[in-house]
Image (cartoon, rainbow, N blue to C red; front, side):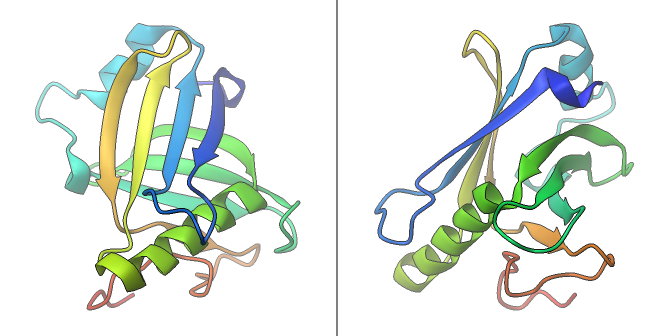
Length: 150
């Protein structure tokens, strides 16, 4: 699928926001193509069936660009990927980290929808791994639940 079929927006990405941060991915391409990736024939992709990552393509400033990706945890296949400014992702990880101090879970919601606003999938997530240009994990920018060893 083409990256330009997707757009990303965030909500609740400020440290003082009382609501759970939300990453909303809107898809404007052929619906059947994304539906088949979100609902494989052999199983369903629930909250634990996906991995969410962000990989920087340039220096770690807030205006740097990177690739946001959602993959099938079992097969490793990309469900979607798109180009996103780092500031959008950093705001969500910071807000979710601050929220973890209040409610103990550091969670955010990932919503994937069609361009007419119809929800296609919603996931409650506590992990978002952010990788630097060199491929190493940026622990201070990532959401890593306590007790998880990476």
